[in-house]
Length: 145
Image 1 (cartoon, rainbow, N blue to C red):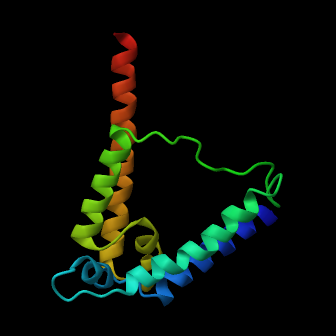
Image 2 (image 1 turned 90 degrees about the vertical axis):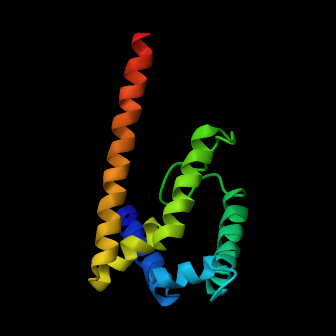
C-alpha cells in the first residue's frame, strides 16, 4: 500500500508541476517551438529545472543498493539507437509540434475539463493499441517464416 500511495503522490506532484508551469497549455508549447515567430522560452526553463532533480536522483541512485520501496532500480539498459527509437521519437515530436501536447501534460490537463486533452488522450490510447496490435502481427508473421 505505501508503494502505491507514493506513486499516486508522485504523479499528483508531477501533474501539479505541469499545471503550475502552464505546460498543460498547448499554446505555451507551440509558442516555444515557433522560434521565428512569437517564441516563448518558458518551456526551456521548465526543462532546465527538471534536469536538476533528475541529476540529483541519478547521482543518489548510483550510490544506493536498492530504492526505499522496491527491491531494484528500473533504469533503462538498452543504449542502442535503432530504427524503432528514431521512428518513435519522430512520431512523438511531430505529434507534439502539431498539437502542443505530450502524454504527461495531456493527462494532467484532463482535470481542467477541456475537450482537447480528452481527444488527445483517446487518440494516444488508440495509437498505443494499434502499435501493440501491429507489433504482435509482425512478430507472428515473422515467427511463421
